[in-house]
Length: 139
Image (cartoon, rainbow, N blue to C red):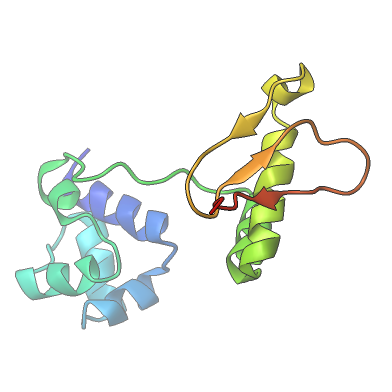
């Protein structure tokens, strides 16, 4: 894969069209198009601006990733993550407890627990409701 193909690949990975990509790099859409067809290359200032929004400059220049891009989430996974991030701490703990309780090892009667302040201890989850208790220090 050549630089022009890697630039296009990175633009698409980041979810930008050519016009948006060019604006970020302080270039014209035509210039960005030239980068993707191999008739031009971005300068250091353009690469720096694009790096600020997640472009893997090392990959564009050398073909070697400086990081492994995270896998794309499905729409359902993204929705769950958005709700989880916005939820109060107690709701996040309950959701985590429910997911851990539904794990295959729990179906066989296993339990999940961790220790420390604020840890969640739980066993099998049955019925509709989920209960999780914080570990309380005895004193």
